[in-house]
Image 1 (cartoon, rainbow, N blue to C red):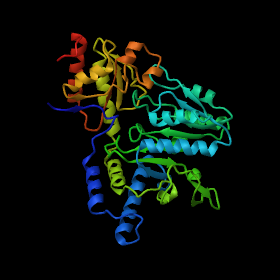
Image 2 (image 1 turned 90 degrees about the vertical axis):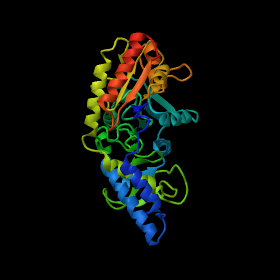
Image 3 (image 1 turned 60 degrees about the vertical axis):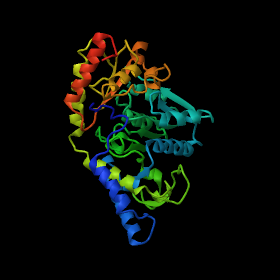
Image 4 (image 1 turned 180 degrees about the vertical axis):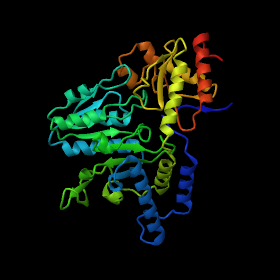
Length: 392
């Protein structure tokens, strides 16, 4: 049975260039970048070349990009450092009810130690009202953390509007965005978003798992030296970990050079027209699925990121649909919609019928996805809805 993989929002297959780069780094360029002999210096040079490649794709300076073990680490680091920085000014944080757990769990932990967190609710398509963001920012707000693209719905959140609201209210709050699902799928730079902190990772763009990065605005990462444009390499942003001083003292630990090499290779391999091609396929899938009685589309494809399509089969549970499709070799996700009989926190927060929440399924596309694969998916879902059966 041929496997049809349509769960790229969960993870992506590693592209050949990334796999080759990782193998070469482990076998040929294996020196410790902190070592002072030629093998180590060569590894350090290559690491900086890889950093520059990822930074260029993100649209920031290389010295503003710090490698982490994953997106979760980067999110945790951004949040904890930001609240420590602002704790003397206030204890209020603004986020959304549909963030990834890498943001929600740190927020819940902060609530237990006295921080006041506002969780903004989404609309029926998973979007956040920009006015709600403005209204939520208070004098004692020290951090706004809002994902760029929701991983279950594909909705694009108003990060730029949040930055504008912070500025309009003369707030000193920092702005963090988890851009893991948006990186290379949407055109943006940290400056265009107005973000101080941006999280990205490799395994959503055909790179390996276990490597992410945090953008830290230069004025946060380093002390000003002699002029507004000159900074000394003297870190003032609080590290999440303590250790040997790697990553200019901000992210210690021996560098995973095979991972950074693969991350950069994946970035270099991502073609300029890929996002548009993925969008066209997603829109084709949405059009075909919309013709099936018993299917409810949740994602608003006119405004969503190009690779995610959330739909629902309200007559079934999302998890059983996922299992039935899986039995036919088609890999999709319930979007974490069913967990011990309950919808995910994303769907639970949305003002949609309960049956739609329980029947939610996420289909997500990648560079190698094809129309033929979509046609198989559509045929199987049509069978389920018309036969009222999960048996094939």
